[in-house]
Length: 356
Image (cartoon, rainbow, N blue to C red; front, top):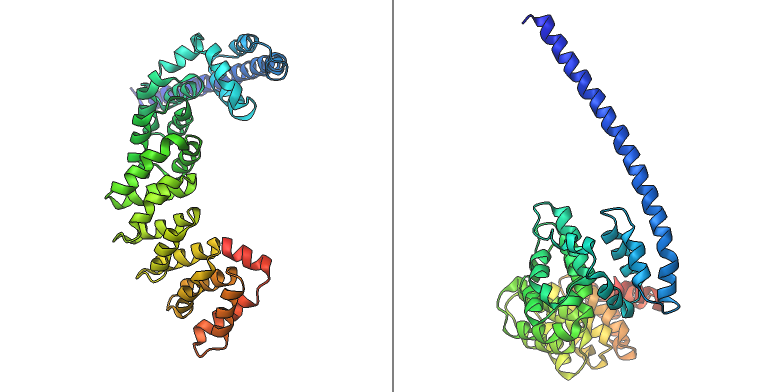
């Protein structure tokens, strides 16, 4: 085969490929337009029965029939959106009961072990809509899926299927989640605080791994579970800085003599981040009796500790401000500068700085 013939074959092949590519794009665009039009029409048909169900108390079956008319592959996503944004929590179980026998729900659930993440995502979304206690193993597997989108969708199913075993599994691997996923998981665990609290308190009391223990204490603070935070009181002398810092932050949710005792000790901690966190918490608690304990930290060698201490003293009312005035007139230049700066702030500026 001559060189010219080879070039001709290559040119023809490329031309055919280009024509086929253009044909595919045209067909795909036409298909997408039809799917979009069908989706918009079907979505419009859902509005009336949905309103009749949510407002007038009608049966949800007409809503399910209208959802059934949605184009293939769009129903799960659209119903998940409705459940999050439109349907009150009290009526989601009624909808779930009507959806469980739907073939498109069954088809989505069957894909929970697919090698394609978007199919596993559909299964996770379906479980968030109709999951039951018998689906615990499936939800557990999808929560720890390699893809974060699947994890988030499966986490939405937790309130429907969570039991002590599943809650324990999630807590034991909490620190392994990506940060964004962990934030969403925390918001969901807050909804099931009554089930999470005892398991979390048990792990805080007996945990030994630094990453796990710090994550559990941070979770206890965020979900504001008093039993778990009370367990954190016992870890105030933990050898790891991260754990002691987490304890100092969490105790703002647990005011009382025991918390003040632990915080007073943490104000003198060897780690600057712990001293700063303990001072901040004492200020937020308004613990006026802690003013003498905080006063020495105005001379701390670390700027952040001096700042948090001065802010905390300003939050303690007249007793704390008296300490600031004494420091402002004292011989320690660093303490005097910090006391002068904080004393000159307005209440609004002080509040904004305290929340920073």
